Length: 455
Image 1 (cartoon, rainbow, N blue to C red):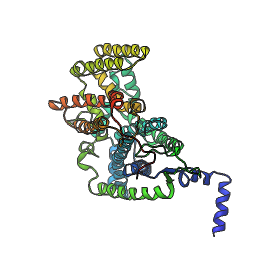
Image 2: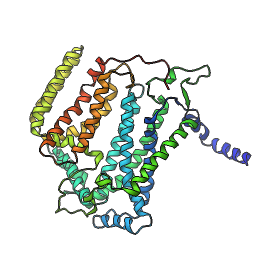
Image 3: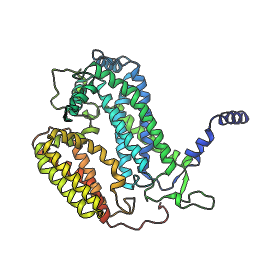
Image 4: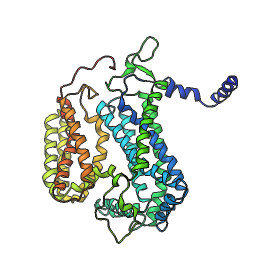
């Protein structure tokens, strides 16, 4: 039997690099030996992607992308299709768990400096995955054709109309395929959600893994294990990914699936956080929900949007722009850089007076996502890991994490009274985490990094 198996394996390997791929990416891929709890979330995100694709395939077998039939088809899946309720809850709960794992994966990258060289491209590919995931979630959110889905899509798409010179109105109409969210919008969102974006996601994940295995994994110490090799040419601080980390990841997967199953079977709506109550009624163009709120994983950026009022522009963004321009001019030595800072700052100040607050809200919402991509060039610290960074970076990261959670909560609350003021303060703190990073990472006192990884 073994001879037959070896012969078959040899036949396949002669025509496809099966063994070479296995060795390069698993059995002979050496990862740092000091991975901790935070390194579960990359593999868990990959697991959730598989769950989403498989459950989505089963849902599309019965779903009807038609405004007259979409809501009823979802109800049919939930009530009449054998195990349809499970597939639906796997998919809806999986969407939230996807963002939980991705957010924790990104937090780990920020803590341990996984965006620093030589992993800048790896980080940018990861950001492309994050943006594609947000697009996938937004388009999928419309498909149940519930009332919150309809009005949420209507509001978010209409934001593009804030782009001046008539471009916004044309772009909004082009995205919808109609003057309002309609059957054309539902059909194109279905096509993108089921085919286009998942293909892009799978391609980006593949490229992400290839890039990771090219430069090697980071570790909690931020030490490059490839620089310290033994006589055999292998990293002295590395161990083969298989079987050591495949077994470790299985433990993480088991714990994750227990929590995942508990939510699916006992609290799939999670009090309206995973599935809103307004989405259990059909879309009604004549009945606006009391509060139009996106799902929780979009609410921090939604808070940035709603916090940007005319007062916020003049009393918040204007002073922030002036201060950042002055800081940059004082800090940089290159004359051309000083002139560029003054020029860019002046243009932004003029634009703050010309364009309305709605446009700046859309810009800030985009910056809330896009600024993560600039972390490799904003962090000036001589060390990578938070273990060896000083109190400034640690304090800034703690404030940012708390601020992110507070903004997420404020995004679910009415935009009135103290909520607006808190959101505006949170917006400034959010921006300062990124804008001030070159300064607090430069002056932060760091600890000496050891030659070898620590256990």
